[in-house]
Length: 76
Image (cartoon, rainbow, N blue to C red; front, side):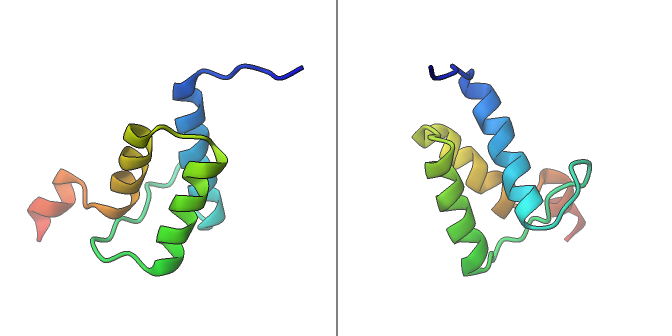
């Protein structure tokens, strides 16, 4: 029998999965870069499919890892 998981939990697990695969600790903030390498993009696409994320959640995941945070943008 399949276990139902809330959609918000799937997004949290997807973020943890990407961080783990990239070698970052659970506590570490993701390394954000406006110019992401192709391997990271492929990982994000694979994660969206693996965790069955909605288009909106997929967009959030990509922005979370690829776009600089507002604090980082002000420092530049």
